[in-house]
Each structure stands twice: as structure tokens, then as C-alpha cells.
Image (cartoon, rainbow, N blue to C red; front, side):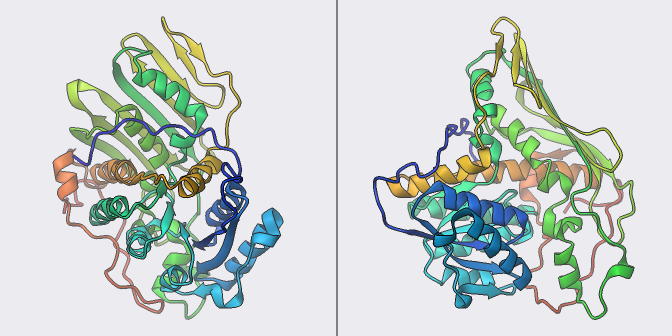
Length: 414
């Protein structure tokens, strides 16, 4: 068991929550300057009037340049990234950590997350850590160790599992945890969408591009980098399941899944359905599909002995004797994460999301394992897995063989 805990208190969130308390700049750096990382950096600038971005790290100068241009539209005077603090390469994260920042935002492909997170906490940095936190079980175990170290060092570690910072989801989940629908009996979550980053055919690979560069350029399509669609995207739905289940460990799970559209050399599934069994026979079902021209839906249905909670595009609704409908103004949950992080630093009251963010990631990896192998997987089995997807060392020009897309019934649990 990682640790059973209650739901995170939802932050209402507003910019510069403690602006009057201190004018001391909080310097932050961003590792991974793609769309999500640049968005996170913009939210960090909005979270505190004295936050300054002073360092950026990526494998692409073009992405760094684009990131700087976008951030200047948010708060140009506080974008202070000198040329010597623009770091390139697979070791750029360490150079950024050593550049004098107070906070690091981690937004690279998640296969790198355990290594980057540990380096940040070792160096005494506060961290915003995008989801998921690992792509394999050894990575999850590493993150749990790092989270414990962050607690010892009184460092804030805020997770990118944004729904737990949403008042839109937080208010109804709190009501459910307080008994509004009786005892939870089942949870059904849908994550139907199109492909996030379709894998290009090998014929589009530039001449001379190494295996590592090609795979990182198309990172979503490789399990070692993304964890698969269930672990990288539908993990938001898995996280909400964990939240409602009070972050308790499941007993076991079974799953079905596979690849319908051509993988073009990638090795992830494009559809998975997981059936989790919890104590007392409670079931949770997470269905995930990323195929174009299909029905799309992202909804949550929680069934209890005295009612039901539905979270979908319209206002969350509870039916039954304690009927309720969300009528407030929805906060920006992405912004709320950073408001909470910077407020915690100003207050000297660290937030540590480490255990539950690792637990939610582990739930998704467990489901992926069941789908890949075609076997029933217990929580104890999953936590004991020794299968490492991420290489121990990675060089930009390395050759890196891609394991084939798993075949359920043939892929063995390791």
C-alpha cells in the first residue's frame, strides 16, 4: 500500500495570492518547453507578481525561442532568460537546476520524470511535476522515495493532476466522500478522444536522425517515453477514480486493449478498458480510446447506494435524496495548481502531493500491464514488477531498439 489518504483540499486560486507579503522574486525554470510546459510557465508567472522565469531547458532551441516569445506576452518584464540560461540536450535539466532557480517546472515526456524529480529535490528545489510521474514501476518506486525526501526537506511538490485542484470536480467529490450518495458501489469513467500525436511513417524520418532523437520527437507513441495513452492521458480519469476511492489500493484488475490503427513503428495501444476490483466488491471501470472519427466523451459516473454523481461537460450533478447541482463559477484548475504552489512557498507551508500522484500513476500502469499481458494483475504483483521501460542511460545519438506492440496472452508479466 502506498498510503491511503483523503482528497486534496481544492484551491479556489487567484493570481498573486500573497503579493503583499513579500516582494522577493521567486525564480523558476522550465524543463520541457513544448505546449504544456509553456502553458505551465505562463501560469507560474500569473500565480505570483514577483515570479520570474530565469532558465529554460529543452532539446530544441526552436522550442525555447517559441516559449520565450509566448511568455513575454504574459509578463515580459519578468521573463529574464539570458542566453547562458538556455540549456540544450538530455543533460539540460541538471544545468537548469544548477542555474540558481528556486522552483523547477517539469514538463518533459514522463519517462524522464523520476530522474528529473530526484535531481530537483536533491538540490533543494520546489517542484511542479506534470502527470504522470513515471512510465514503469521502478520509476514509481523512485518517485515515492523522492516524495519522502521532499517532505524531509520541507519542499513543495505539486502535481499536474489538475482535477484535484478544480472546484468543478472538488465540490461534488467532497460531497460523495461525505456520504451524499451513500456507499460508493461502482465508478465508470470514459476517455474517448482522437490521437494526441499520431506516429508518422518511417519514410518521414530525416536521414541521419538517431533512434533516440526520432523517438523523442514522437515521444507519445513509445511506451518508455509516454507510458501509453492510458498512462499519459486517461490517467486523469484514473486519478479521479483514486480520489473517490480515497487513494486506497485496488485488489486486482483485468483489462482488454490493442492497436487498431497502424503504429508506424510505435508500440502503444490506441484503446484500453480496465476493470478494477476494490475491497468489498466495489468496481471501477476506465475506458480509453484514441482513434479518429469515433464518438468522443470524457465523463465520470459514480454510483452509490443512495444516488449517483455525474461529471461531464455540463454542471456536475448528484441525483438521489441529496440531489445537488454545481452552480458556482468554474475555476481554472491549471492555474490553481500554480497558485497553490507559489502561495505555499510564500507562506513557508509546503504542499506535498507525492504519494497520491505516484499512486494514481501506479493505478494506470497496473491497468496497462493487465491490458498488455491479458492477465489478471493484483496490486501486490504490480508493485513488485521489475520491468524497466526506461533505459539506464540515454545518448542523443544512440541506437535504441523498440519492443514490438504487446500481444495479450503472449506478453509476459515481469
